[in-house]
Amino acid sequence: VQLQASGGGLVQAGGSLRLSCAASGRTFRSYAIGWFRQAPGKEREFVAAVTWSRTYFADSVKGRFTISRDNAKNTVYLQMNSLKPEDTAVYYCAARTYYYSEYVEEYDYWGQGTQVTVSS
Image (tube, rainbow, N blue to C red; front, side):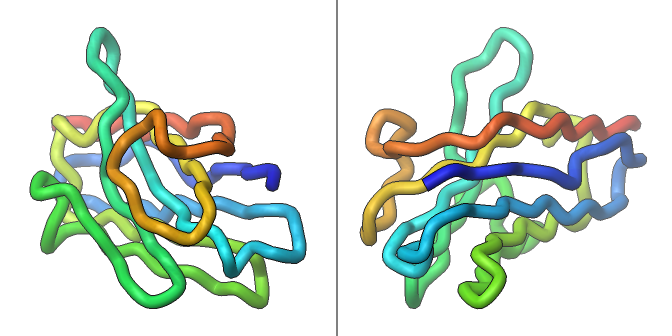
């Protein structure tokens, strides 16, 4: 499966952005899709994930971010509200078969990143 992330940009603190992850392939619904982010000088970290039936979030984004998938469009969305300067990072979407994971090394396919910058 090939993934294409988009929707990043510059936003003020407290603002919102919606990231999209468009996937190729007819078996999209069998994949768990995760969002990760990497700030300069830091390791890539888990943000959120969605499987066929459930969603998962890092503690740092719970209550502010939501994740959803549209299987008809082969797309996963990450809605980011109440953004903070510490959310600034390159955001990546990734796919693995069926099951959720919060570990970078357990994802098989990665899209290119999209930059999110939150100004204070």
